[in-house]
Length: 194
Image (cartoon, rainbow, N blue to C red; front, side, top):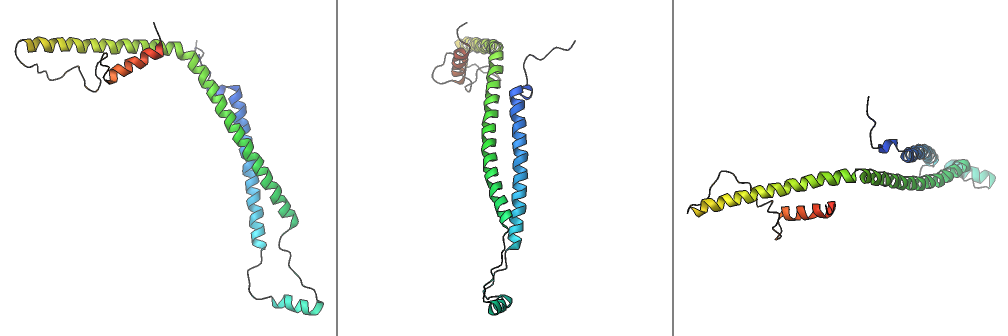
């Protein structure tokens, strides 16, 4: 019989599923709007007359014949209206995406808090074992120091190929800044009194 996982995965959290689906739909809509906006901008750009410093001969002849100045209509009003509407929709979608992204982060934070709360007692027990191991290692270093004192009491310098003591780690009771001192202090503060 397969055991059921104790903790729910974030991907299985109904609130997270909902917000991710909403974000997906919003991003799809934004992509479609941006695509259409680009199409319209390309259409409008292709309809612009080529810049010229000289008036068109055809326009000049037409003006001479009719007395009316003809200004070519380059932009379609419908396209401009659609482009303006798309820009409004794009802004709205970006704001909605920002809100949904913030909601996704909130849901993830709430989920993380629940998981951490669930595992906190077990983690503190693990850290208690780790603290006990650090203290046991420090006791070994103290035994080694006693050996060094015994050797030196014979009038010679103690020289072993390897030592348990490490200046980088320091000692549990060395409050002058050893790594081990601060590590033990912080773990005790985390796990609380036992």
